Length: 224
Image 1 (cartoon, rainbow, N blue to C red):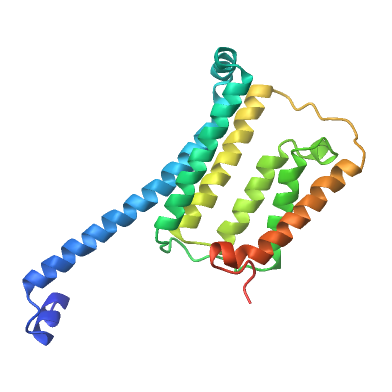
Image 2 (image 1 turned 60 degrees about the vertical axis):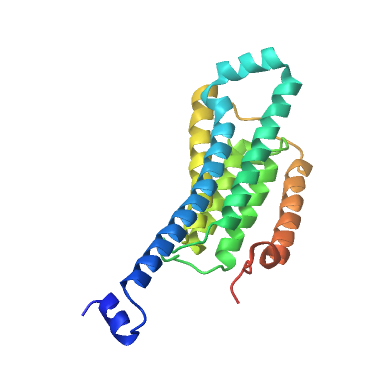
């Protein structure tokens, strides 16, 4: 006996019409949920595309800067980035996470170290320190470590879309910039203070994220 037949036999008042209504409701909820995920994916796509644009089409970027002026170009670029972030946040909050795969790890010291290293590399991209002598693209490398750490402990649809999308963006950004700029011209040695600055800022940012992670994202940064 099928499930609908069992349901009807045990509930005489529950007939085929009720099942049809449930089917319509389920389809509607599924459609709404897919719409929410579409918003999240759209925001991630826009964020990545806007960031990839200067490396993909440098001539078009230069032309826009000449036509608009550098200040207006940067202003427009910033507005588009902020807009894409808003779409990501809206989509993230609206979408209901569903399981995609079983995460290989729980949040632990290893993933925390990867996130910390990612933050330090991210901030190292903003100063001319010695880290840039060994890592050509510290911001992208940091993004890959940060996103990869989250994918190791999160296997739901939202996390796969967000962190997986950003990791793919970072890899593409590295490839496109290398193609645009050619061979890597390594910078010379720098004062140690330029390495301490991103280290200190990265540690402070990491501590703040660890402390407020449960409040901001609903789950603790490290499983207890």
